[in-house]
Length: 143
Length: 159
Image 1 (spheres, each protein chain N blue to C red):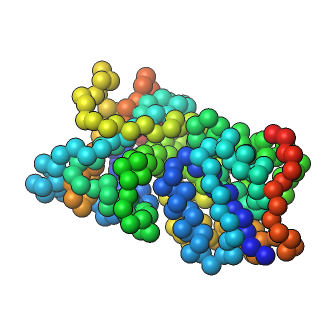
Image 2 (cartoon, rainbow over the protein chains, first blue to last red; image 1 turned 180 degrees about the horizontal axis):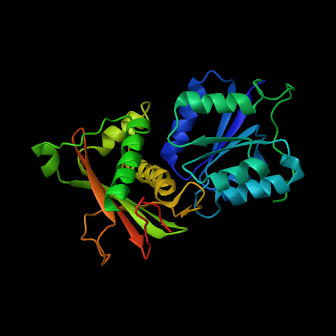
Image 3 (cartoon, chains in turn brown, blue; image 1 turned 90 degrees about the vertical axis):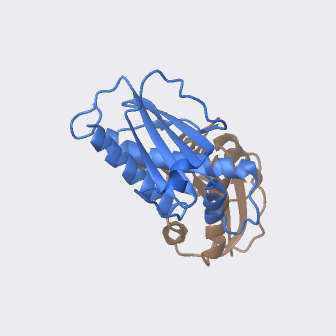
């Protein structure tokens, strides 16, 4: 009963920071997958069973908004928890993301405690999948 | 007006250096910091209610410290990792600055940060809207904010 988490951020430094925070958080993290943009993120979702996606907004090739929109259009991922981790400061855009797609928002710069708390909250304070089925790739997603 | 922008830039930069990279900043620089050579630079361009770019240039031997602070598990950082760190710091400063000067409801699009590997004369024919220098352990950081064809009200908010 542990979490598979996808980190989508164009900064390798930020991905490593988030990964380290997750591993130190005490949360039951099983696997951490990384992607450098929305397109890579969708591919990672297609190949792995992911419980939670931490997604930046401003990225090359495909930004976080478009990636989240595609996730929400795909019924396969209707239950995927999405947290935006971004420098985004526009209350308009944040409200839109929270209303339509995301279940959490973490503003950069963040403290490890803040990130851990949001991850804990959006996963329902639980420890990953309710079932103990082995993680298997999702078959045939169509983005 | 420029003082408002400078205050906003200072607020964003100091917060980012301290909370993201875990380094203290100095407003008063010593001789070593003032004479430190160029190390690396990065720029983030943005579009929205106003267009422009934010430039961050580091002088001295700072980037390894910033990278190690952000990634303490890293034994030795690569050049690529250090530049990525600099680009992300620039990105975070810019992302925190824009709501201060454009208003919290304004929507901006930030372009991917680009590195400035060499110190070159600024090719932009206009001076920055504001700039600031902050001392860091082992050197200094220079930040310049460039705005294009934007009117800024007296309270520092763009219109």
